[in-house]
Length: 305
Image (cartoon, rainbow, N blue to C red; front, side, top):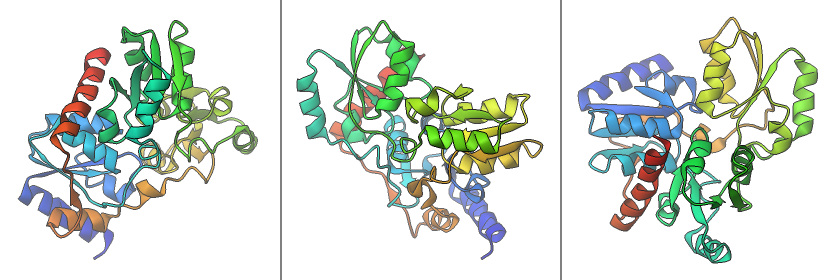
């Protein structure tokens, strides 16, 4: 089938089977076009909880589908491509986290949402890139162990000098690979463009940026700005999506290396087979993980209002 034919069949099956399709903004444009909701990982999980459908397809990576299941335990949640993981979410094991907690006694553990549910179950609170400053500020604890991304953690720490942070050495391998040379190269090619970057990038990329924020915040800023040219310092798919949304403006990737293969692995065919019932994986979590990780996420909601 051609793309449009496949999309039409997905839309038909979605209505027939009473399914809600969520798509992270890093997914391909054909997938975004058949989704009910598009956004960042946490925003999509909230939509999954509010949506009346009892079956959810999360077009993203595994930790995002797990978050949907945590917030909507009574619903069936599917990941269209079971291989769609996240290297940052999978890099810190529970056993190593327990050693870190012994190394930093008395520290509250703030887990970036880009972690497994099993890890969240051993943390005090969850944060997103858009809520991290607000949540950490509202935490009653003065000492915070921020995992697993030190780039986002240090960005938060700069905003909250009254808190004391400790970090682990993880992070997103794609955002963290960006350096000042990438900024200088992009600026030389596009001197009039504003630089918009994700806080998962290192400080040498964040410091010269005109705007720092989550994926959704970057897209909103670009759409609302009166500027006409932008360098996008996050996953390269956002450049394409903004080109569709704002054809009168110009968008350039900070680097061609800002490409996430885990986000790109899910295809429209995967979505079709999953909604058809011949592919994908239903998310199943143990009672202990459901209880512990849900507590972690609910505290984020409480502290972040």
